[in-house]
Picture 1 (cartoon, helix red, strand yellow):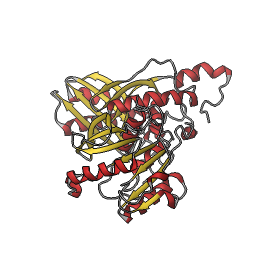
Picture 2 (spheres, helix red, strand yellow):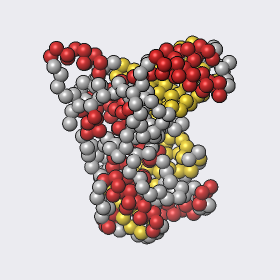
Picture 3 (spheres, helix red, strand yellow):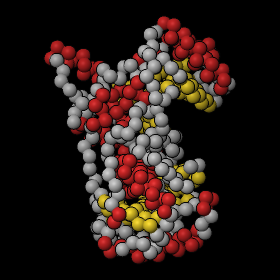
Picture 4 (cartoon, one colour):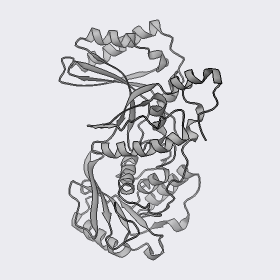
Length: 411
């Protein structure tokens, strides 16, 4: 479904200029995932340009710039907002509103007070988030106070629309030396809150990290696996995220949808866009914990609106419960093993058990979230790795290729 709609001949030029108005955005990521987020955006924008031909410009020449903690891009306003529905690796998308020289609190208050906030804010709660580095303006309370005072000034001169919000509106102020950057949150709740997960288990993995692992695997091989096995599934995140990687999020709303300027650029049908099933995969789950199986079933139903077939979820030990010869090929196995800090699992035994499973199942490729910074010696060959964090703990995302398999050819 295209969002282009129909334009009257008389208003074509003005409408197109409005929709193609450009802005700067920052894709916030967990440290270490910046390059994966950049390539995810580049790949998906090619697909989105087909779905939103008036909103995304094919020949923009924008490739994105990786910086610590995210990716800076300059795109149309409509594209920057639409990305909230489709990107799976970023945790938040900020829109840069203004950058200016600032060495005094009163100067900050004045600049905030003069900005056209009525295009972005409504009446209601506003949270101000500040960060600073090597600046003389280094008193957090005074910075927040200056921004809030500026907003009060703006409200006396601008008409804010009445409140219709599900979450607070977030403004971000970043000070670097004497340069101040104002941004507004376009996401609302953090993007790893997909809106489908109703049950979680102990030691959960964040959805953004699960998608990063899938994209690391997917961008490392030429052919997509037709089957995913998550043998220690927990609440099912590693196996569920690939199923929605190319789909628009429809189970939640985003802050940009409350911007008073948004309806003129993006119709309310925005979430009906990207074509589904770019990669068609069967997913199988297993866990030794009955609570994990119940959580996975519930989350699968909430995500896809149907029950998980009994043949695709197994309760039992990961080394014993699967008839591996019956699983479709090529097969991707995804694993987030227990961490020493959380479940006191002996790592030598974990490596031994993992080795046995790899030899028993012989997956064509394996995506692993491994605790620490060093990947273990396992049957096969590590072809890609990315160091990052999971819940504050250092982990490494690794892609392990089965040298004996020819079903998935490594790039």
